[in-house]
Amino acid sequence: MNSKKKLLRPYNATMVLLDHRGEPQMYLEGGELVISRVETEKVIELAKKAKTDEDFIKLGKLMYEIRSKQKKRKPQFVKN
Image (cartoon, rainbow, N blue to C red; front, side, top):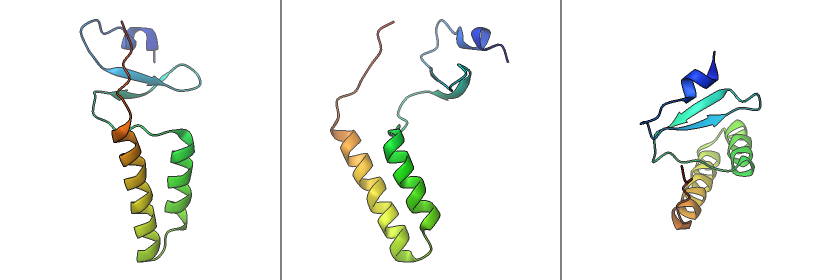
């Protein structure tokens, strides 16, 4: 995939998240919940271990905490 051609969208407000090779990994339109790698690792670890309702409740509480922290942060924008 020729990433340079795909990334040049002059009137589109889509943010492109790149992988370690510089290739597009995902396109963000706005309003998405983006969490840190540390938080992602915690969520994945709990999700893999979850077997009981109590485990899934813990996972839900973690996601609620992550979302609550994010809602309190000021939005960050990149200037063109």
